Image (tube, rainbow, N blue to C red; front, side):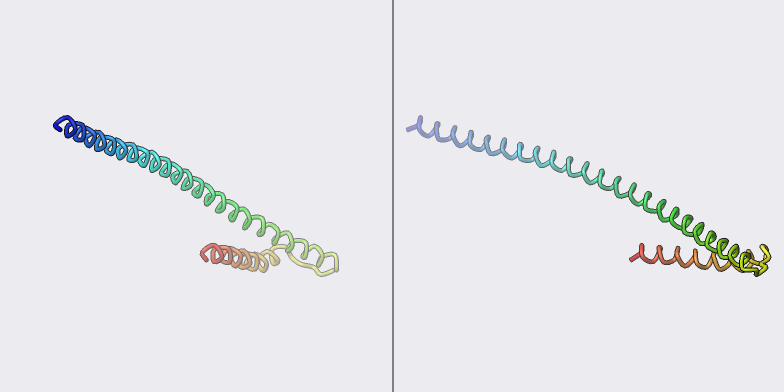
Amino acid sequence: MHYCAAIHQRQQRLAEGAARLNDLLRTRAQVEIEEQNSSILHSLNERASIQLKIQKAVEGLSIIVISYYIFSLFKLGLESLGALGVDVQPHLAAVVLAPLGGLIIGLLAWRIWRVKRH
């Protein structure tokens, strides 16, 4: 009888030890998964930061390209007026067209900012 009780107690201790070992292994696996998730989130954060920097650079370059295009159109328009026989003084044209070009570029920049905000 004592032998059976001792075997039963030993089996209970072994079962409790196996349960504790199972809990420790599960905790270790969970910690490793959390570390992997943390590194993945850090990598995603870095990518998003880089993409934001690239997007800002592209927006700045697009404004520069659009402004170059607008001033080229103004120049072409003035040259065509000269070909039609209308005498346009260069400094007068610059005084009139520079604020107009600045206004158009400002409106484009404001529109890009508004679209980006929403």
